[in-house]
Length: 127
Image (cartoon, rainbow, N blue to C red; front, side, top):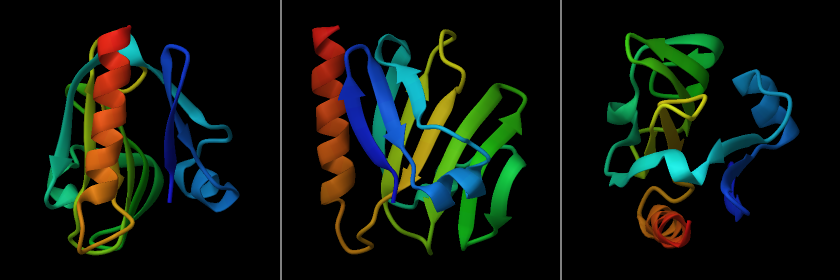
């Protein structure tokens, strides 16, 4: 599963080698914290996906990894597994992505998504 950390003024999405390959990203993704406009825990992370996959890996209901293009820009999807909770982070104009969508590792609990939201919210207030 991807990891979320805050380094200085950036939200860093850490990806394993296999995740980088599936998402067509060859380094960790760095997004400006100052451009975060919303952070939400999604009960069904698949419903937060927008647009079409281009490029990336995708099998509906199984995996959606990579860039998703839509009329409002580009989103980064890092979603695996069935209908489970996840985290949605929306960004403003200064970010390369309009939205980041990540599934939670635990289907039964929203704790990991809530903890990530809390960490991002806290860091965002300090910026």
